[in-house]
Image (cartoon, rainbow, N blue to C red; front, side, top):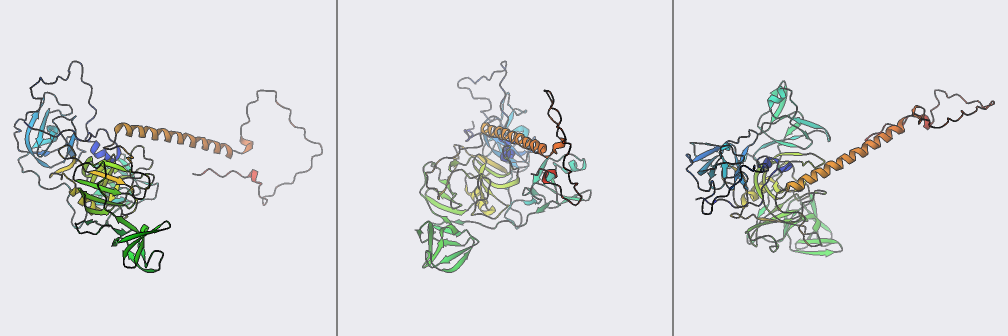
Length: 545
């Protein structure tokens, strides 16, 4: 008999937007069983269907998702597609098998059979095939040669408000099919090495097969080389990195300038003074920096609410740093880029609910400005759509920049992803946390706030009901804004019509007599062509937006 994973933190079902790639593998809501086919529990003492494993007839299976658009298959905690998700395994990966579970009826698994995988979980046999080859040994994400990233990327370069089409395949372009999606300025895709010519036009092909014009995009070649530091027992704390492009060094608080330090120079903080509203940091004998010029790293005692798991992370929004802890000991520190208003990163204690090798992050239905960031690597989801993850599109770590996540440099994201346990087994693209592997807690605070720490958002993955309500509210708001805009346009158009062309209101009473023209009216001068018309005779300017 096999014991398998117990309940995960939550099951991701129907989550839109940034988690679309994971949500596309989530099972739909279970239909209500027909009255003629009730679910009858097993008698007391009898094993439940699928509880006893049978010989699988193979030692290895290759993952072949039934949906051709999916690059991985879902692994469940039990032989049941309605059970909590244990993780995902990549298409083409070969995984060891411990046996199989055959059920009389299995929802969303036509074969009614699940393979029990090593080291954990069950995959529907519809998504796997027996293999005579040995199991995979490589991790899903492999660094490209001379790169800190697993993919090459291209970024859309058009004017703000313009868009670039993205087709689902090269054949769609040849067939003049409509685009799959429109991309805007700054959107990115992970691409294959070479471009492809179609009727004289060059195109980039993404690793998922999508196609974008090369003319309006460019291959990204420069990525951040920044990386934080491991903290040893003898590492001096507190310390910091220079935030500004160049920071002045003074001989004392409010003293004379005696030098300057370059951005991201590391300095030990030996003391501090506050004069008025300005903090000064001593970094040496007769050497001071303004506090605002430094991203400070300070050790803290383990806060309440961070659980008992040895691993936990402290994210300081005020200093834009993250410190990884094992117990009471800090072991790694680096810079982040958290959310800038109005998308500030929420404070609170958040268990990491998902560990994903790479995922496409895109705007939600309730976001007013669409975005699309393809194959974001090394992702640790801690609150709904918010995550610690690699950011290949900027090098502004140490300053607020994101849409709510805590951006990390590629090197830092990979380091923390590998540090957080459990590690991804070979061939796996994602794992969920459970009672056997309790999740590390991400403690998000703001050291610059005077008011007490509080939990600003709920824990766990996105709540489908809350997401739906936010989408409905956004749709209603947009409809109201559109109605108001149309009313303004109609009012403006009415003001633009010359008075002599406006329709007079229908007469419902006896019309008034026309005015009597005086017999001796004074003569009116004729307006020459060189005489400008009066303001009331000039047409109104068209309404612009």
